[in-house]
Length: 448
Image 1 (cartoon, rainbow, N blue to C red):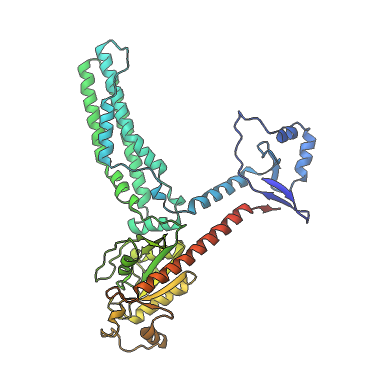
Image 2 (cartoon, rainbow, N blue to C red):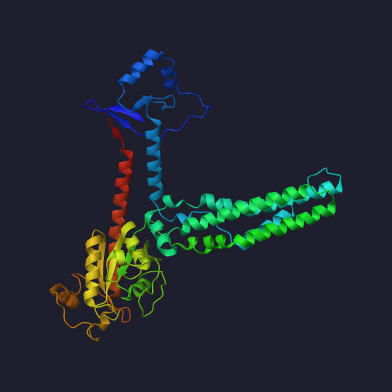
């Protein structure tokens, strides 16, 4: 912490991270001078300090002031948590998770190549030494990767809120901790079995006995690993399949009722290849794709459709969409189907649209009327609109909406141009927000 004086006479203390000084490092000259002063003089210094601030032997070289240890620890914890929650993609930064079969084959091969300790002339002693070492090696080759996974997978509390919601809504609450717990249980079991049989093998009295105990130990270790290997497969097949989102790249999020044509638009806009069928909730998860326009790279996400109901009544598939809208800095492309080919009435689409627009209207926004080639060709689900706003919405859609048809390519070119403009504006927002954040960090201070 660095202290400066203001024109008004107040002291401004600028925070710095304070860490315990290793015993082998010498104290800085300023601190040494302070410590050489008499006890009364040091007590007088303490009386001149504001409440909550004390002199500390581990102070920065340019200043003798420090927050007390508890306050500093709380600040470090808070800042550390903020740093961790600033970015997403935690699951793509973890070590590569090998399939369980590969871990076992690699461990078997490496452990069989472990030789006995050199210089043992007695055959029985040499064989039991080799057996114990090979069992210990097999145990370590199986357990070390598991320890790496449990230690390097991010803790749930450190995940970005979007990723935390994604895990809970996709796999169920507590699933993440459960899988990592099963991996750690397997590691403990492997370690226990390995140590037990290595110890037994080391007590063999004959060469034959040592060989038999080595074979038995290998068998037990491999059985224990096979019994719990499904936990590793869950890490490979589930957690690492989480969609990657870069907060520094503008993201277009397609939102709307089920089957209004969001996935079809994603296909023409990006590299994402969602399933396209004529029934609701085709999209059951978050699908990420990329748009390359004018040598610029953007992200696009297709989200599950939203039904007309209260948020508390939504299923987990719908809540995935709300998680994206709530936690990611996105631009919204809201898709409407006024032909009612989607199976949702215009009135219900309007209610859902107004709810989402009112809640997330601060996002950059583009309304698109899809399937415009079908307008007027299908008999409406409801003939009478009691609300004038719904009647106007049925005729014209939202103000400024773009009409598009993927089948006939009506409005596709204009859509791509408008999307590029929207994402360029989103990029400007991201850069502005980043600059404000950096300025805030540089100027962060505590005023007493």
